[in-house]
Length: 479
Ligand code: SF4
Image 1 (cartoon, rainbow, N blue to C red):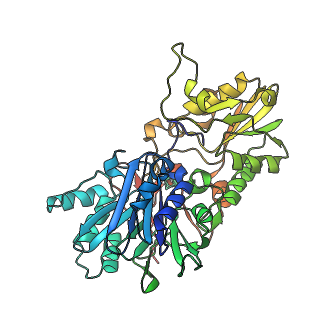
Image 2: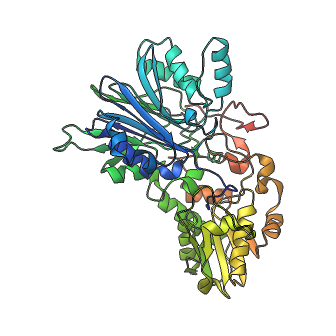
Image 3: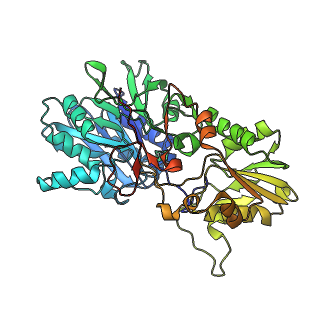
């Protein structure tokens, strides 16, 4: 996907390190590998066994933590970190994570990826009972629930709190001497467990948790397994323990992680993203072939699906659009307005490749349609004879309430126009989306993994949401 205001935004990334002499440095490197999941703010909390330290700021991980002085103020062998793109609450520093509190259960720091769908309901009840909230983020309700739990031990209080929240959450929690990691019972968001074996510097095994396994590679950790839906893992002085804190629900892992969010070098929900994303492109080529000369991806996220499309169709794969990676949020536009300035800042066509060609353009989604329209125009203006747009998932017809920042239904072109009307509006020679069944097959849906596809169907897997006008799934499977 081409990152633009017209498109979806990433959600968040979390990382946790247990038992390493440079825990905050590893957390920083892990967050750097997860930067694609959120670019508005980042934070790290560390523990030296006595106190929990925290530093968070607006901006990119590298800008916040590349200063050694900042990391020196985060001592200890335990750390958790968080990258944020705001999906609830506003984007102020106030809502940056990890959230740290000192409550009746001790010092706790918490970082959350996902979105709760009953946070407003819980917050209203807690506020009526006298709780005072300091942020506008949904994550803070978890902290309040832990503090108010009648359970005697912290693991029990966390489990009790997790049973009360509904929606998407992959969480890492740190106390003075323990790290907890948990996923919601439907497993919406990924969370992996890794290990750095003991060596000269580090006398015991280091345990690592991260939203995506690509974070392990940079810090020399090996992938162990996914944290399972409904699982609460704790690592502490007594070793690692795991328990299932809730009834099993039908797994609803976010299929859009495979389509767009996660990095191709990650393994999520038991499957390599590279493999599934290429399979999406292959399936698209089988379902929507076209007589053309070259396959061109919309960089960067269209690249892997385009490789699959080209391999399956036998057409040449060409980088006909070049992305400028060094684009900040604000740019001064020339006074004499340049048409499609925002898109041109980020993408430029390679005329020598496109001129006179029949082009299959591959992208991962169309949200409002305005960016796709500009890209099609850009490819035509560069001399392409025909532009055939292929999308590696079905039309997005409904918003996400589980951590992906989607515009409301009225803004989603797929919810308001037929495929032919969209084709006509964006002025492509042809337009095809991947089928729902084709997408699930490419992502290996089966006995081991089942997916949430609510933004393509409008049928939501949770029983209750704060938001009106959405249909829950007719049947919830309990194990
Ligand atoms: S609604 Fe779409 S984006 Fe949201 S969790 Fe489900 S599949 Fe993922």
